[in-house]
Length: 256
Figure 1: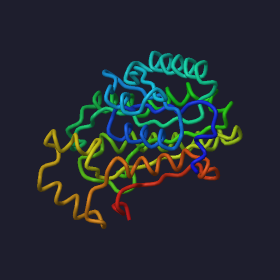
Figure 2 (figure 1 turned 60 degrees about the vertical axis):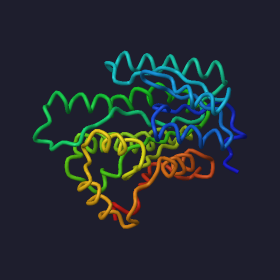
Figure 3 (figure 1 turned 45 degrees about the horizontal axis):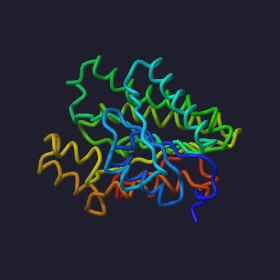
Figure 4 (figure 1 turned 30 degrees about the vertical axis):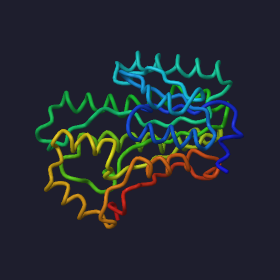
């Protein structure tokens, strides 16, 4: 048993309308958790209809200026705590599409915007959730990238901010452990869905690039969002109760 069915309160999944986020929502629900997901522009109506009334959807735009994003996240956590009694899990899977481009072609303002969306956005929601997670001795799992371990060319606009996210997650693990809070990261590699799918659709990854990427993966195949969700939900669950401050790459051994 995962233990979620015995936990009071709700799991919050930011970016729960995306490929990886939706897979995490499904896995948490199948493990017995009530789930609140966030979306930026449109609620995932099909996912909500599929999973029923134990899943709710809430707008949250973490790309807003930090003060506004933090206030919106705090208001959402307060609403969920009032409604469910507790927030026991935060899974941060939110993040904008990131084009693959050489860093020499990235303007400083563009880089700063990405840092705000990735790093400051995570801090805003984690900071808002800490009081509730202290009460529940809860868990944070952050979806980052396998590219922080082994760098793929043209991925700096994603990998650099996510490296900061991972450093922040480790800091939170050290500082908040005294309250029973665990903080871990999961780094997706190349997937058939999620960010990789968007890069394929946009043309950032052509057939040649896909062949090279596949050759660099010892398992010689791409993964799926469900593979990432399995790792996320394990780390969030009581089964991983003595694991904190760690990162698990789900990448087919790409980083080895």
